Image (cartoon, rainbow, N blue to C red; front, top):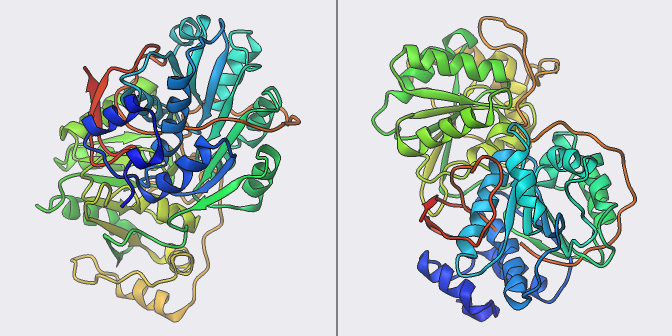
Length: 467
């Protein structure tokens, strides 16, 4: 079996990995790291939980270890673009963990917080910047950051970038980067728009691929419960009261729905909190910290807000509302069974969602087992699904119908700053990039690593704390 030592990484990185208990790379790391160390552009097809963060962070840190140059004021040497603030924080913490034995400067840039600390971190120049596109363009427009010295560009979760409307801002940013940079693009799926973006950004890329989108984690026990819309809240309450449910993420299609579900669970005596784009960054971070510590048992989330959240020991994922995009189902249930653990994914399906369930089964290329052994089983819904009848409800701005009670739906949260900017004419790339997680320092951090995390493998599984 290949070890990290076999990959030729710098000794300080090997020592950091060993300190965290990591000795063997994941498949995506084993495939991508050698290509990145050789200077190739890489197109990576991989879902979260595969260790892709370390797959790009370790080669970047290897380059930093071998090059003692300092970034000039307000310049960036290695740029990582990511769709959400939570994912930006986790990637930034990953660089701190893997680079704990190196001297380098880093900054984490995202919206939803004051830009002052971020500007101060950038003033002296940074070796690594992890950023969401909206806030980065804001800072560029104000003259606080210069991208003319970028050696490598990493675009993480490109398909979610597309979903959130960030493709044009990404092109605008890429147009300002040097043509000789190295570029890495990661995406869990490859729709045409992402393929076009990859063609625009990458130069003769090496393609590495693990866990195709149609597959779901082998260790996840999936089941669907047919239920009427009015009984969903009662079913969720009874499910979460089960002794086997230690930590659960509950998915809704709208921000309003997430709030209503969390409020109802709290009334039912089940500690819960909601996370979505309408919440401030501090509120979102408090919810995540409470969920990690066990103070909150259920985290209710929208698809975009939960993208990139990498927390160990999530025993259950509950689809309170089925997603209207079948690929989102794969991303959702991937929040459990991480770091070698097992997990359970439970989906509630009412009469209006049977078509969504059919689309999901077609995408994952397997049926989802039906669990009718619960007090709210709706046989008419089960028969409707079996009949092959029923069409999906019309989409609205919120991606689904309103939550029980009927308030106006809203779109899922993005939390990464507003999309903006026009398409540019990008060039070619040159450089590499990794994962972890922890609390966000007011939005920016600069320094030389110095964090300790507890996890089951490099790539974002687990917790970290300042040390």
